[in-house]
Image (cartoon, rainbow, N blue to C red; front, side, top):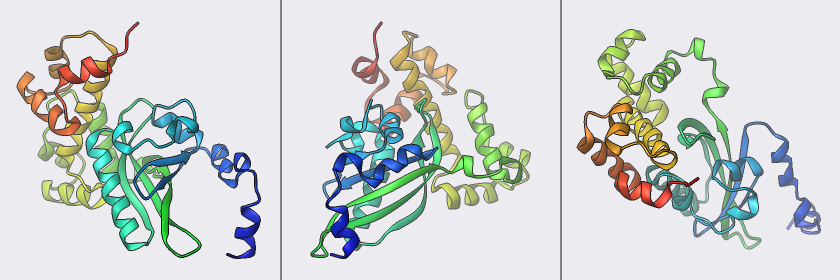
Length: 244
């Protein structure tokens, strides 16, 4: 252990350097153990996870806080980092906004080691990728904004590609290279997450929500909803809908 590490261990844990992250706009910070349990995070991360304070994060797992497809992606990355003991930098991935909608974020993950050299866990920061870029100079992010603004309409990937100066193949490739997901997959996930919010906070009929969110019919909605969130819309509503 070097002199700095020795000095750091003498600090009151209630007043650690990690508190600086609470004063950095649009930066979320978290720490996990080797079992995937969240040990702590800053206030912004806690709120994004639906918690009132970092204390409520302790020992929670990603699958308790995020949609299934997000949690699985986070877990795969964590397992790779813990296995190899190397940092994962500039990961571009979907993460919920405060409204619960999927937005592209950039994540940096670093391993944490014990004095013996054994991996003890990991830490990371998450920042909005979209806010770091100039939409006017990036047609790909104009596509994302267009999909988010018109998700309830009948959208065709070939038509979107043509509108923004891509061939269909170019758009598919650039979208996958940047976001590790296709435009159609992003659209479906966006629709599902918006629908899930309406299931929680309204009493609208499920069939109406399905059509309003851009799905062809009720059965198509159920199929995609269960595939992404792991339960049917009805079960989700019963489990998560708030009252009063």
